[in-house]
Image (cartoon, rainbow, N blue to C red; front, side):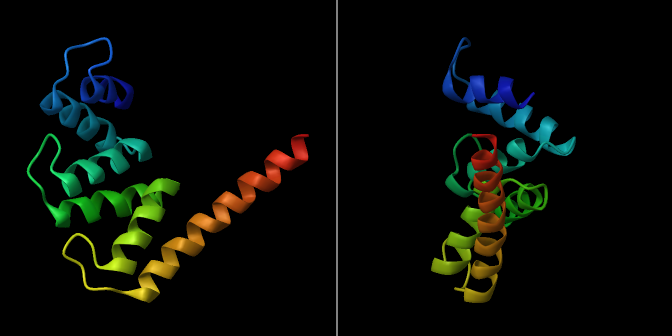
Length: 116
């Protein structure tokens, strides 16, 4: 469902339709798909395909981050670190998400190096 949503979002193989994209992202997100949760957060933050809604953006970014989605962790770090999306700057919350994404990236790099 996430891939189909992304196809509609980009207009790849189908006519571009942001409303359909959001519907497919939502179906996948409700089933626990981390990437779809991140993409929904992005849509709500930017207002692409839906009304801009920072509260919903943060909700979906957090759900995605809790599922291990690194891009969501990085985005949360930036939002809290710079006060984007109507949030007060919160260095502690920013650092929390930065450390979590950094730990995962470090593990990925370590695992990748071991394969060589």
